[in-house]
Image 1 (cartoon, rainbow, N blue to C red):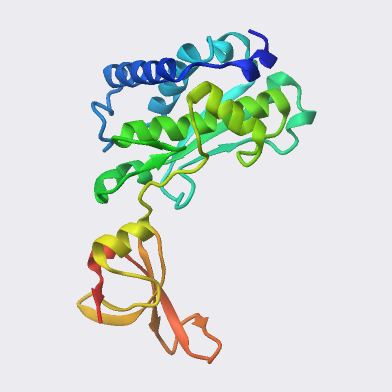
Image 2 (cartoon, rainbow, N blue to C red):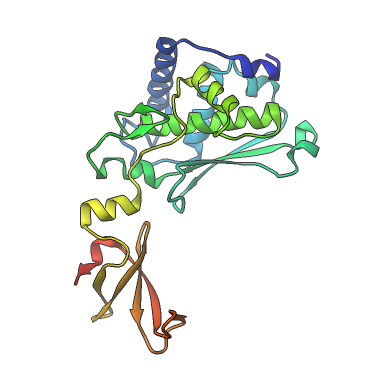
Amino acid sequence: MQHKNLLNIHYPPPEITQKRATIRKTLISRSPHITDGTINRIANSDLEQLFKLYDTVFLQEYFKRSFSGRLHFSLSTRMTRAAGKTNYPRNLAALPAEQREYEIRMGINFFFNYNQLHRDKKVNGINTKDALEALQLVFEHEIVHLIELHCCGESSCHKERFKGLAKNIFGHTDSYHHLPTEKEIACTKYGFNAGDQVCFRHGGKEYRGFIHRVNKRATVMVPDEAGLFQDRRGEKYSKWYIPIPNLGKI
């Protein structure tokens, strides 16, 4: 397959569903970490295996047979909004084919926390049934970025070309995910929001402050005359990163 033909792949919806199910079943059978639809453990090698399956099942082994650059796969615990990201050199167009490198990075907390909230969790317009399906759909989105970058030297999921590729290859009708975020979990499950007055214990002492930000942990600002942070009124604070379950509301 020539690279331009990647832009012309088109599968009917029933075939997309069947292909996605085949990949799911094969990954579960091969991965030492993923044994069902729940994701509690995952490694970079699982993402590499997942890409090989997508390359075979959806892309006719294009990247195995014809790609001369390098692909990398990584996991991140620091991604709080995007569940996936494709990194590439900014001078991509100036590089010869064999020097082009791409990295697909996945924000694993979205999948670890999948069952923290009980509501619909759509990814790319598709209502997912479990964390593994959500992982596949986010991964598919990044594969479309990879195809666009490889074939066209640029990619944007806001533009029509990307939307067309995503729909034709994977049946996506949207370019966003609605997976539980750390902030939403903190608000829904524990009742915490930015600005709330809270307390916590550390080293046998109780501290009181307010929540400045909520991500994987809460950023709590505690009044402290020796603190390094100062607000507009001149009040000084120390900054603490506290696990959500360790907070009490005042």
